[in-house]
Amino acid sequence: MVARTLALLLSASLITVNASPVKTPFSVRRQSDGFPYPLDDVDKLEEASLAKYEAYLAKKNSTNSCTLETAAKRQEWHDMTVPQREEYIRAVLCLQSLPPKANKTEYPGVMNRYDDFVLTHETQAFHLHSTPHLFPAHRVYIWAYEKALREECGYKGWQPYWNWGRTAADPINSALFNGNMSSMGGNGAKLDYPGVPAMSFKPPYDMIPADLGGGCVTDGPFKNMTISLGPIGGPLKDYIPKNPRADGFGANPRCLRRDVNRYASGMLYANYTYKLITEANDINLFQKNMLGIPEQNDWGVHMSGHYTIGGDPGGDFYSSPGDPIFWFHHGMVDRIWWIWQMQDPENRMNVLPENPPKDDFVDLNWTAKKVATWDLVDSIGGMGGEFCYIYV
Ligand SMILES: *[C@@H]1O[C@H](CO)[C@@H](O)[C@H](O)[C@H]1NC(C)=O
Ligand SMILES: *[C@@H]1O[C@H](CO)[C@@H](O)[C@H](O)[C@H]1NC(C)=O
Ligand SMILES: *[C@@H]1O[C@H](CO)[C@@H](O)[C@H](O)[C@H]1NC(C)=O
Ligand SMILES: *[C@@H]1O[C@H](CO)[C@@H](O)[C@H](O)[C@H]1NC(C)=O
Ligand SMILES: *[C@@H]1O[C@H](CO)[C@@H](O)[C@H](O)[C@H]1NC(C)=O
Ligand SMILES: *[C@@H]1O[C@H](CO)[C@@H](O)[C@H](O)[C@H]1NC(C)=O
Image (cartoon, rainbow, N blue to C red):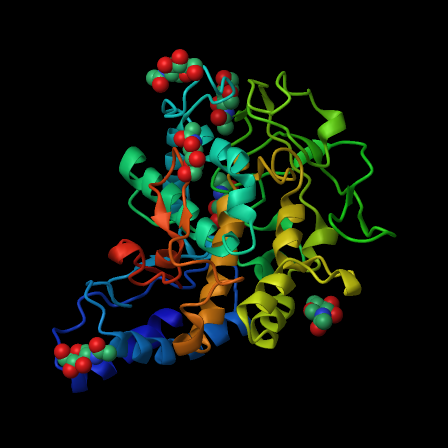
């Protein structure tokens, strides 16, 4: 798909525009190792939007060299080959073995370079999640993580994403969570805990019941991972050791815990994402609906994804990037923002919730340079051309 559509689009445009021939035919999508994943409605919408997006890019006359053709192609985990997945996992484990940049005297819980990213999400939690920053700050945050994997750990690919709909019915048996050595899983051991009250909703709270996990992850490449920062919040706060520091920045070595949750993933079928993208005509409403519609007791796809991972630190608002699946989930959030933008690029590329001032910035301290918020809206050419990626 997207790949093929893109190649067609590009070759069609080349006939009229007279540029050099397409050098890189795309064949990255749907390699599917025995799992047939037909295009879902969101995939189809993405494909159908590319022509509009290409026309917009052509008209924009960007001075940087990023085009749909040269852009990095972030793939869905299930579309990657097993060796590609293993290579990605190797790079994540590598980042977890490098020394941190943050000052260990001030932040004794930071054990490695990976933890710099977790720490940033904790110290900058309100900056990252304020209404105008949620989308752009997470966009640069993921990009910086991908860059660290590539530049500091020799990873040659791009950050994968998690198409929620593919695993909605049975997450634990998917190639993402199944717990084998080429997955990002597995589940935690069974823990007896009450589940998760869906946050920020009026009583009576919708309770997400505990599923089969909640304890330490016992299989897969991250079973030996040591979590150190936090917890600051989260559903397991009363079931795991407390951080020695009130701010959560102390060293609190413990296992990675998950509760891969089927109740939460029931809100992640493609129809919910499709509805989200197609029913909100302005950016404020789009973001609001993504974060949940309390009146309808709808937690939104963003929280449903976090709760599908659950556990510690995945279920903690502050420390959630400490679970390496975080980046897949927020990759999908970034992807659907992009698909939403592409529905009407003239009017949607350069808008942000609450319309922050021109001199507004995002500063991710140890993980990315300080950057103007408005430079982060365009994944093709944003940040002076440093952003140059699409999702396939
Ligand atoms: C784009 O570039 C063309 C050719 O250089 C120029 O004629 C046109 O005015 C430019 N358009 C914009 C919107 O800058
Ligand atoms: C780390 O923080 C401590 C305490 O604030 C300070 O004394 C030290 O100079 C810092 N180290 C570096 C390398 O900045
Ligand atoms: C892990 O699971 C994936 C997808 O289910 C499969 O392609 C792969 O062969 C499995 N690897 C092992 C070692 O079982
Ligand atoms: C976990 O640690 C044990 C003991 O050091 C080691 O034998 C095993 O290979 C490690 N497993 C993974 C997945 O890192
Ligand atoms: C979305 O799809 C799921 C799975 O097919 C179905 O159970 C659910 O009722 C659908 N919801 C809506 C609002 O269409
Ligand atoms: C992180 O960035 C903020 C915003 O620019 C700044 O105020 C703060 O001093 C920075 N913190 C560190 C530890 O660099």
